[in-house]
Image (tube, rainbow, N blue to C red; front, side, top):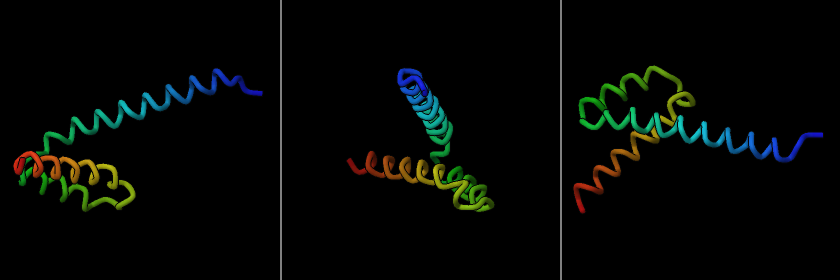
Length: 73
């Protein structure tokens, strides 16, 4: 039988690691904020299968949308 407390601790440690990885990726991708930098990144992503690039493409779309919203506020 597994210890419920150990299971909960493992769950939260895993969630923290996932959130840290996502935050690090968000920060790295924030540098691709010009049209030419975006085109370079999109060219790199086009060489890989969709299931490998889905998360990065979603972050880039979110950054682009946030930029558009900021410009029109």
